[in-house]
Structures are given as C-alpha cells and as structure tokens.
Length: 258
Image: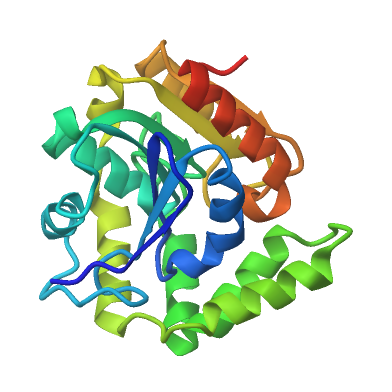
C-alpha cells in the first residue's frame, strides 16, 4: 500500500508521526524548519491524509506498513499524540530500526488507570462523539483552544484551517478504531525496557495528556529526558515552535537535554 511521504532537508534522518485524525500538513511548517538541520521524513499514517487505507486501523498493521518506508538505517522517531503510541509500538516490534524516540504530548497509557495519570474515559468519549459529528470543525476548535492567547493566534488559526481542509477527514470507522487504540493500548513496558535514548516533551496546559505522567515515566525509565514546556498545550510545534526546535536539536546532537 502507499504511504504518503514528505521529505525535507538532508543529513541524519528523523521520522515524524502525526496524531489522531490528522495528516502531515498539520506540522509541515515546523518540519521544514527542523529540516534546516536534519533530513525530516513526514509520513501520513495509513487511512489518513494521502496514504492508502488499511482494512483495519490496528497497531500491528499500522506499524508493519510504516516501517516499510522508514530509512534503512536506524533513525530517530518523533511521535506526537497518537503518533507517540505508534512510535512506541514500532520500537517494540522493530527495535533495531529505532535509534532514539522523541515523544511529544503523548502517553504510553493514554487512559487514566490505577496509579497512572491519563485522560478520563468519559472525556475521551465526549471528544470523540463531537469528532463523529464534524471531524474537521471539532479539530479546528480544539486546536484553536490550544493556542489561544498567543500574539500570532489569528495567523496560526488560519494555518490550522488550511491544513485541516487540505485532505478529507479519515473515515468514521478509522476514528473509532483510533479511539480503541488509545483506550486499550498500554506500552509502559516499552518505556521501562527501552535501550535507546528517550525524550518526553509535555505542555503544562495540555488538556489531553496530564503533565503528571512526566515524573511517572521518569520512574519507569530513569534515563528518560523530560522537558516541560511552560504555558504550552497539546500542540507545542505551533505554540512553542522555536523552543521545541531547540530541545529537539539538542537531543538529536547529544541524545540528551540540558
């Protein structure tokens, strides 16, 4: 099947995996700036954007298709939101292909469990119900809230709207299966057993991923590099672009964060 790929820049490769119901257009501007230092490979998840559809949007099938278009050498993967879950699954299934993981606004166990911070299941259902009614409008409203108050808010909202309208929204069945992945997947063991450098970047105002998971993940994997972005929500590549770029460049160059 075809996986849509956009490649920018040259040098050490870093693969970018977007979030639920999105496509590469959502962070194209950020990717192009990151490409001033690296070869940035943006992939549309299967059944999203311009990629072909899978018969079932399930982790094993997703990872099996994505790895086919990865660089042959081991590379760094930057996952955002649902992309974090997929990046961790790729590390679990194809460990020698992943050199390092940068996890942005994601949670290896997305839904709240006993002794683990996460999103309340009822809130996830409510958000999903709205997505089913009007996916693009719901996403635009949600993402707009994540950047509210910024000096360039109007420009960013315009960029968001153009990006979201660039391709049709995924099919309802894909959205539902994506919700199932978030509800049922627990990849904390991948974090605790990881032998590669791990970077976790969270926004302290994120309404989907509680900032409390930062310390919980540090407890799972003491070698994890944790960075909390102040006054950031779920989309730091829009709201805190320069700061995020600096963190990633430091991580890529040294596989550590100061």
